[in-house]
Image (cartoon, rainbow, N blue to C red; front, side, top):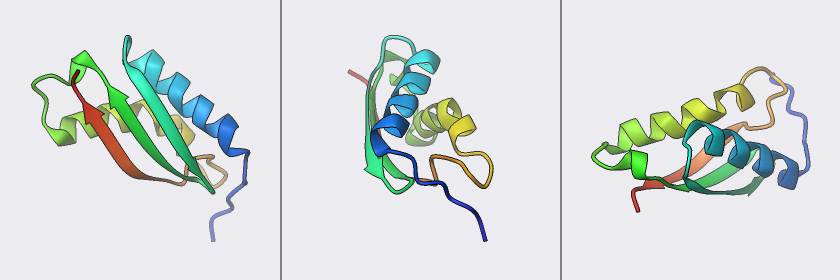
Length: 85
């Protein structure tokens, strides 16, 4: 059974947003959620011409470190909206 540490949602959403903003410069990012489950919306010029899978990989790659291990603050990303401006 995986151990899940319940961190304040605001702290985790800030970490998600910071990680994505660093990985995808110039993007607009909003994360929300709680209990380890999150929804993420990213608007970035870098998504132009990319298919959905490629966009999702960019977003998930940026937060992979937040999803590692039994005590990861992000247990699941229930929804990703990744769009070009």
